[in-house]
Length: 120
Image (cartoon, rainbow, N blue to C red; front, side, top):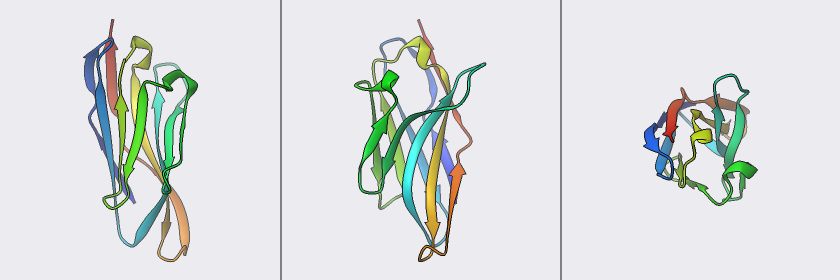
């Protein structure tokens, strides 16, 4: 399963951005997708996740500002980011936990990362 992320860019503090990530491949299904971020000098950490049933979880630092959603039919996950802060500056990565066929195997894939820069 391959992931292609898009939507990063430069935005002023208080602004908004929406990230998208599409999963592609053959004969697979999605269990969960999520967004992670890594700022310079810091470890990669979870921003938000969503299960195929719609259950979501968020890092405390983004609750109330970011919203994750998923189009199950198209295997696309979105991250709507509002009220952006300079500390949100990071490379954002999408991740997918998937299964192949009738759960013949499971796996996890990462997208290539998209840079979000929030200026003060």
